[in-house]
Structures are given as C-alpha cells and as structure tokens.
Image 1 (cartoon, rainbow, N blue to C red):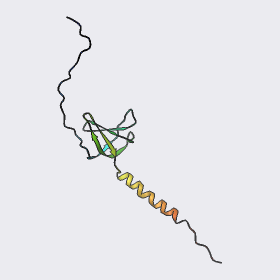
Image 2 (cartoon, rainbow, N blue to C red):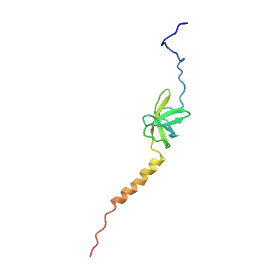
Image 3 (tube, rainbow, N blue to C red):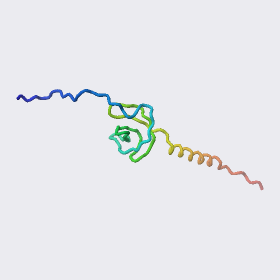
Image 4 (spheres, rainbow, N blue to C red):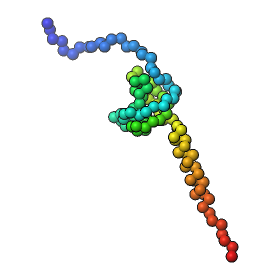
Length: 106
C-alpha cells in the first residue's frame, strides 16, 4: 500500500445553516469572554458575537452589524444605564453655570 503525501481532504458539502441572529436586530447580552484582539465575546443560542469595546462581565444591549458563517459582529447600543449616566451629568453642568454671585450693595 503506497503512502500518500499531502493530498486534498474534503470535509463534506457546505451547508448554509440558518443563523440565530440577523443584521439590524438588537439583543441584551452578557459579555463572557474577551477575544485575542480585545473584543468582547457574547453568545446568542451558542452563536458567537464579537462586540468592540465591551469588557468581560458587562451586561449590554447590542445591535448586529454583520453576520458571517460562524460568527457575527455587533456594536453597543446606548442602553438604559448609559442614558441614566447622561441625564445625571447634565444637572452638574447646569450647576456650574449658576456659580455667579450677586454683588452686595452697601
């Protein structure tokens, strides 16, 4: 029996399995891992989603930007926590503006 060097291995027909996520949809996810490039990794029905700027342990709302065969790419959407932070910062700025003191008359 001759020994075959190299060769081509066929892994079977490519099947386009339906993905559990679609472009434009929003999901609430937990970031469980961090990828080699620093992106947060979440799983939706065991389908991997990469989110730029997300940190491990974070809970956030994401929007799917791109779907590929084995993974998807999402981005953070301004969620409830971020909206509350923006509201709490506005009164601080308003207080700083009101620091003028009236002049006293003698």
